[in-house]
Length: 221
Ligand code: B16
Ligand code: MG
Image (tube, rainbow, N blue to C red; front, top):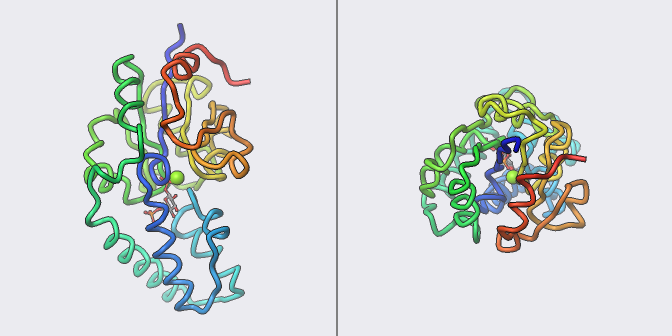
């Protein structure tokens, strides 16, 4: 049997930090007098910090100096860091530890593939860092999701071909990135939003051992 590897996104898959990103972007947008809805926030999930600010400015029809751009990104991150400062393992999303433990029991390779530059801090805070053989985060990539770079680096570091990787993602951009990498994409969230994914589950409580066993022998179509 060809060995499979599993790549997890972080924000919105392992922990619900998406809500903290939303709050921090919302204060920034409000200060710039740019309306910012949760539908717009959906489009920022999995998207890098720079690209997110570019999008918000575009929605608000605003242009700002490079200096202000850098300052706003810094301030947004400071606010976000304040939110995550008090995080602990209670913020791990339901059944993520069960699925990780099952994959480890079955000796599968596991990587993190996140756009976030704060990924390591968060994994340490929720005490999951030791579950990952490889961590690829926003500090390792030059091209943001939907570019497949983050997942391709993960596969390479694990020594597994992309076709044998399975990605768990909560964002439209991340599902596109996994599909672009020719990996099996599993959406975690709303099936209406993540319709490009190969499979979609509301959360990990819906992911059974039978389904995971099936993935061990499934090819990307
Ligand atoms: P940071 P993921 C992504 O993480 C988030 O979904 C996205 O909202 C955020 O802008 C991006 O990380 C960058 O995060 O500002 O912490 O570097 O979903 O790819 O784990
Ligand atoms: Mg995410």
